Amino acid sequence: MATYLLFGRYSADALKGISAKRSDDARALIKKHGGELKAAYATLGGIDLVMIADLPDNSRAIAASTALAKLHSPPRPRSRSKNSISWWVRRIQFPEPFVPATRPTLAS
Image (cartoon, rainbow, N blue to C red; front, side, top):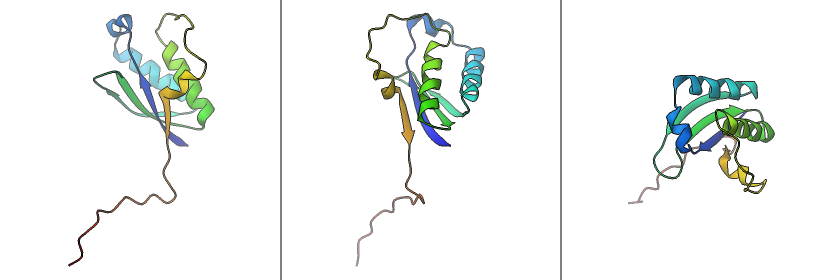
C-alpha cells in the first residue's frame, strides 16, 4: 500500500458539525476504500485538515477523497474542472530502499 496525504477545507456550515462521530465516519470511509487512516491534523491557513492514510492505489485514494468531500456536506454547484480533485490527494513516494539524507561535514 502507498501512503497518501489528503487535504481538506471546512465550509462555515461544516465547522458547526465537527464531532468525534465525523472523525469515526471518515476513518470508516477510508477503511471501506481498502485503506487505513494513520493520522489526522487540524491546520491553520488555507487548508483546514490534513489526513495521512495508507490506500491500495491512486484510484482508491481519489475515490476516498471524493467520498470524504461529500461526507456530511450538502451538494455543491459544479464549478470546478474534473481534474481539480487531484490537487487534494498527494502520494508519498520514497526511493527503494529509503535512505535518509546525511548532513555534509567539513573536511579538515
